[in-house]
Amino acid sequence: MAINYDNFIVKPGESTQCAQCVVRKLALFQGVKLENLEWTQAIRQEQFILKPKRRLFEEGEPPRYAYTLFSGWVAQYQTSPDGGRMIHQFALPGDFIGFQAKSGHPIDYSAQALTEITVCAFPVKELNKVLKELPELSNRLIDMHSHTIKLCRQHMLSVGRKSAKQRLAYLFLELFHRVKAIGDLMPGTEEDSIAFPLSQEDLADALGLTSVHVSRTLRELTDEGLVSVRHRRLTILNEPALTDLAQFDKAIVIQDHPLL
Amino acid sequence: MAINYDNFIVKPGESTQCAQCVVRKLALFQGVKLENLEWTQAIRQEQFILKPKRRLFEEGEPPRYAYTLFSGWVAQYQTSPDGGRMIHQFALPGDFIGFQAKSGHPIDYSAQALTEITVCAFPVKELNKVLKELPELSNRLIDMHSHTIKLCRQHMLSVGRKSAKQRLAYLFLELFHRVKAIGDLMPGTEEDSIAFPLSQEDLADALGLTSVHVSRTLRELTDEGLVSVRHRRLTILNEPALTDLAQFDKAIVIQDHPLL
DNA sequence: CGCTGAGTTGATGACAATCAACTCGGGTGG
DNA sequence: CCACCCGAGTTGATTGTCATCAACTCAGCG
Image (cartoon, rainbow over all chains, first blue to last red; front, side):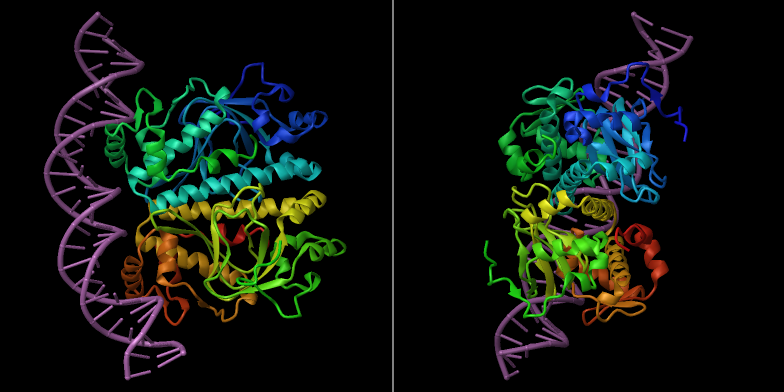
């Protein structure tokens, strides 16, 4: 299974050592004892860099790798034959993406880099082996899955039962707090603002709306002085009002994070 | 932690023995070797019966038990303060419900019986202990979570990007095939029809619609001869057309089931 | 026999999609 | 350096899907 060099760029020379990895404290291998880290290191390929808009994997392929996102933003989405795209989750550094239990079956969603990203790739075959060897790893994965499902449920509540304004507010708050929670890994994070690479089309596809309607709705939110999105930067101007509008619960997004 | 006898009815006398359980082949403990089943049996409380509309647990409570659904239908849903209800998943026999990794935190959704149901209750404290002891169990739980997330993603794609008609068609097909897959456990399952306890309001709450609109949309589907829903029974009259309309993929729902 | 809850149907209105034209800012290449 | 180009975002006009409100039917049941 050779790496597809059209998509991937191997990080020149100095891949991070797992033992020194700053992301590890957030990631799948957090609980792994140092003496076991050689496992990790052994099955890990090099780190890869991916340019914005390139895909990490695509729905329909049987997955060969699972990835720990090391830096950057990733959109995970499904497409329907009639052209629609539904982003079900944005991944941030520390997130583990592309893993599914039945590794033989094709995966049902795609993952696309929204910024330049760095990932650590783990061949799923090896990963499954290690999961058998290290039970602590399985339990960690359970924690992560459990949290993923929680975010997924909340997102579904948004899309199914909230107005466009509420959905947008909710997504802003979720991403704002997720980024702030890993702030030291995210460049340009400030007290009330974060770097924010999403286009209005990305937002629309995550919220089940059109980009045109996101534009109008966003205008309402900014006119009311709740948020500001300019120059790829999101600023929360009135968090209480926004939280109230969106019916946002920080605890669900942050305190339940399996790795904080 | 006493059982709340307002909600639960202890099954008189003859609770099923885990070793003989017909559901076990589908459930969390499938992989567990017989000599370990005493574990299961030991931590399991009695089986409980719950009447329709009663709740198994409610959002906001820290969960004390997780449950294997033994018989009947369950709706898992969230409510938003302004009255909306979003059913994110229907549970069928064999499904494992109410488990979350961080057992100290309040759960973020509720579970309600749609029919009379029987469940096997496992105290989460004990469950976490057993998960540490039996790695095979952790891996099984990973499989189940992985599948749950898959269904959740598909559901989100429906709600976010499909028309009312497509959503309804998709849900019918999903439930039809899930029920048929465990047909021997579901009374009244036939070649092209299943027992179907959902009201139009349940459907609406699962699809992000109103019951009024479900009524109209369902009429369209029946007028076109695709399905029939009468006397609490769902009949699929034209599966190819329905599958095409809904963009339904049986493989995702069935072949990927972790326990079949 | 009337009560009740679920479902149906019609009329109306709100929210979001669609179509289209236009602006704006950031590259790129001459 | 400027002109041009391009993609993203904005705005307006219109349409369409679905929500809302309300009245009514109907089957099941005490």
